Image (cartoon, rainbow, N blue to C red; front, side, top):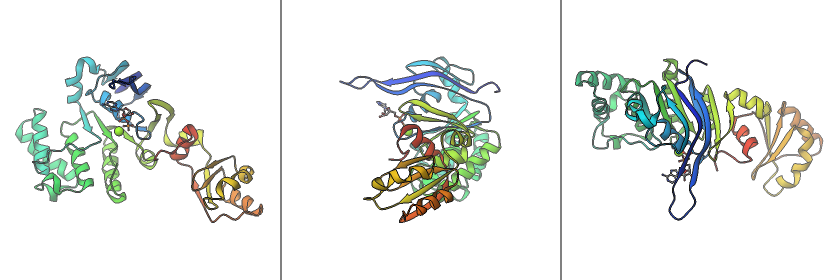
Length: 313
Ligand SMILES: Nc1ncnc2c1ncn2[C@@H]1O[C@H](COP(=O)(O)OP(=O)(O)O)[C@@H](O)[C@H]1O
Ligand SMILES: [Mg+2]
């Protein structure tokens, strides 16, 4: 791997909570991010993703472990690191008093860029974010997806070496998510290093070259989406429903139909190389599911396998 732009070794963070034992949010994460890579942290709510991003972004100090961002230690070089990063926090923090273009301009000024440069950047970034028509609109007149795109545009004002995105599409409708993914693809194509967190497995599959699956502050698995699926799941999954009352009762009879069976509250998952074959075996047994569906394995299946839980509760 070329010289890592981010390197974490046994990174930990505990929070002091009054009258209670310390809360361990990040419990020994080790990972590296290579330049130009698109790296993800995939995990459910409370996994420690935002806490990790804040330490990487040099806005929160670590409790222990080693951390280097662009070769620098955030404990000693916070401002230097922050000036070279673009940060898209989980909650948009745009200036509601200002319009879209002013948000970009002021942010550039904040980084010490000359006014002339800020004007040029604001126009370029409005075009990139597909917000040219909204240049003069106040922030609260923008849709959720537009705000998100503006926050990303703003994070690019200082030509960051690394762009950190904490749950870039949480709360957006499917169409807005696709528009945003398209913008992030462009950045990836231009060679920007992306580090993103998400609890959406499809987002991780679409955007990440490599990712860590995180749960309760620990790494459960690491690899490319396809590697993780190959390693921890089967090629296909047959989803069958027999009705909420019957699923649990029928499940043992499906054991032989595939390699592994998972019973969820509303359906049964049969892990197998060939979903259609599995369905044939089940019907040959005299069992008739109310609904059946064959699909490829996803990172959701990987997470379920590793933790016994779903990514989204
Ligand atoms: N400032 C804080 N003070 C105390 N506990 C916190 C604080 N921030 C986060 N936590 C706790 O740390 C854990 C990890 O949170 P977080 O990093 O936000 O997870 P994620 O972003 O994956 O949802 C959670 O249990 C959360 O409640
Ligand atoms: Mg979070």
